[in-house]
Image (cartoon, rainbow, N blue to C red; front, side, top):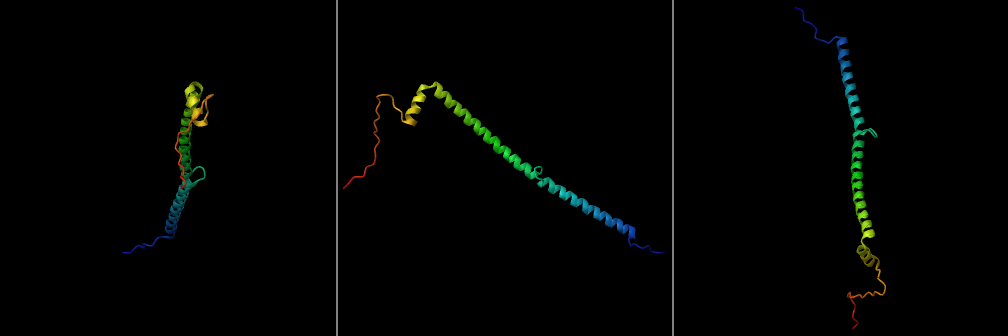
Length: 115
């Protein structure tokens, strides 16, 4: 009985090397595509996360501005329709007085006594 050689033939060896090269090339291409998806300027996942964070920040700012606008509109309505509010605001914030009105200050001021 004759034994068959188990050595790979040259064309089989070349085919196996070619398959290995193709697999390596595919792995490298997939890896590069993955990196592109992560870090592509303006298109990658990192850019997406930054834009999503900025969107949340701007939405929160818009909500705060709307709340401030509502408060300011209420203040404007009070100033236009409520004379007592307007009078109190003038007295407290701007120290305004009515004609012939005097201010008495009863606050205690600390004085140093001389010995």
